[in-house]
Image (cartoon, rainbow, N blue to C red; front, side, top):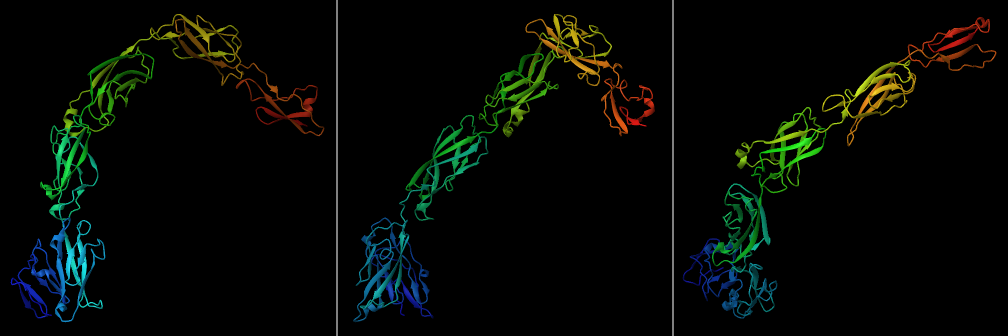
Length: 572
């Protein structure tokens, strides 16, 4: 193998392993004839100066073959004006009688994009016929052949790489048509809102694909609320003064421009919507510091008043929703306060009856806060908030009669006579605490119909004789009710309970449960059972004895004891 340099700027030096090295730099000039030797078949790069200089180390010797640096063409340009762009040649081209045909294969010839290259079979000149898109084909790989007349390779095929040089023919493309983000009001300066993404199809890691971001406009534009990182597209807050109560959103137009934002770069714009999120930076306020209301006595579960609350935070959120608490004055548990979630009003409700004679006014202290915790920016203001005062006046109501005590206990016996007065049960006036006037009395319940109630005096007398043994008497007690009805309109009624404790008298004789019994002649004994309607001690246990009637009967029978109510008559 012989290596030689055909340009005076280069010299070839033989090395021990039979290879060669070239001193100096290989500059590729128009119509230059620098030859890079391979193993017989070599390439001449023609048609113009490369945009870069190839150092001698670009020629890497590998298994006695030269790896050829790539030829270069521009995308989107008519490179045919520089044809031929290269030439392949065999060393055997100079031998007599040798007819060589040069061919190529690979991308642009036998592979897509088709019909891009043609080669002069006689001269080996490589011509380009079309325009190349680098974004589709960044590198073209071809192989050159030197064939004899029989189509056989005279040389080992030569690999040829043609690099497509990038031009800035693509604009940045955003990852989505528009962007949206959110950030809390009063957040720290530099808080990340969102990141905008864009790509450029031009060659990576070059100025053509280096994107720079910038904010073109902002609405509302009263302050520069946001900044964008030129390189990363990160949008961050630029001020601490973001206030949702002033502006709850911002609209930005953002530009992405390649060539690192230079004037010659291609640009695209996108829209960005930023929502300002609410924080609890407003204390709920009432339009007054003191309130007064009234409620009638002896009623419950009625709404007394509503407290209007004003809060500038976002409606229907925990930052806006009021939270009321009675901190004093409700020790008796008469009131409840709750929030109307639609109007944000505080509703004070009476849940327990109040007696005017016991309480005539009540002073409540109420504090109002939010369901959500306060933002740190207003903590010092919260400590200065004072409770509001609510005065409740209890209205006196003309009250109906009342029995005091509500139950009257009367002790009596079965020997009381009909129409005999056994007691009196008058009602009192709740307001005056005296015997009620203009009252009519009547029976409420009297299941045995034993009683008579005097409508004017409330005297209780007997309609019938009391009977301890009545089924309506439970454990010696009979219960009835009396009504006291006022004569005003509408009438008011009070109910009292009459408990009559009846003392039992021995007014019933023991009787045989089975007075007659049929027996057979061979019967040895008879069981007998006795009962008495009187209660102990006027009832059992009983004493059994045989009366000698007819005469001498006691000689035939004797009594055998079983228990207090049963015995046996035993035949002797």
